[in-house]
Image 1 (cartoon, rainbow, N blue to C red):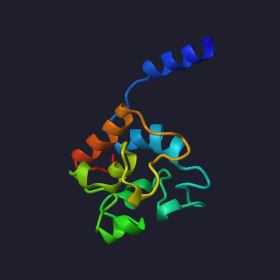
Image 2 (image 1 turned 90 degrees about the horizontal axis):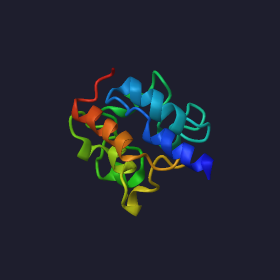
Image 3 (image 1 turned 120 degrees about the vertical axis):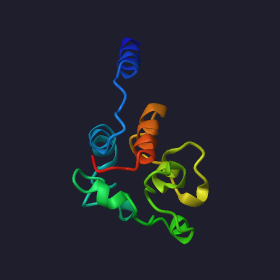
Length: 129
């Protein structure tokens, strides 16, 4: 019971992720998305690698690889438009089944603050910062 309370306290006291790619990479992509079977150079699930130094080129302005999203002409990240970005669609609750599994798959869903940081980074033009 004390362990659960400590975990809850630690997550409540955590500093929010800054809406910069470098912070998102460090706090979200690297620890939660780059497992060997996921979005690493080895696994490259969905033809996407989210390792440091590769995320920007893999995300911004790139067509989505997921079959339905590709057919619909979605892009992974549309700079300035989080609502049109497939990355955001994959992270939000209520993902339509036609788009596969909600992400992150193995680390569990992102909390609202982490999703908000990604959306704000995109809203600001998705700079490589």
